[in-house]
Amino acid sequence: MFKDKWYYSTWFIVILMFLWPFILPLAAAISLMVVQIIKRNEVYDMTKNLKPELIKDLGKLETVKKELTVENENLLNKNNDLKTNIEINTKLCDENTIKLEEIVNKINLNKQKHEQIEKFQQLQKKFRKTY
Image: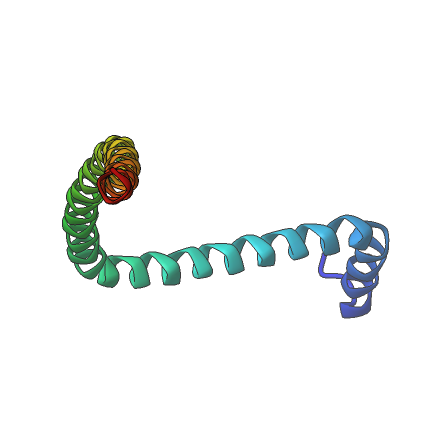
């Protein structure tokens, strides 16, 4: 009934010889799956510990984002105000240059009138001297 110990060991070796091309990839796949599960658990543990800190940081980032958007809107409004002020100032500058040109023209006319009056007075003096 009971056969020799070499009988069973030889059949075991023969079966392994034919099945090893299937057993090795299966063992490799199982080991890779185990490694991935271990890594996933490690990552999960790390993220579980970090979640409250990340949520706090996210809240801080959201408040900073709101503050920056408000500040950006304020700067845009100031920029628009400055643009309108620049436009108004250029219009006023143009108007002032026109007024200055008119004043310069009036001054030149007054100078010409004054010169003509002086010439007339000199002529009048000459005329009085001679007559």
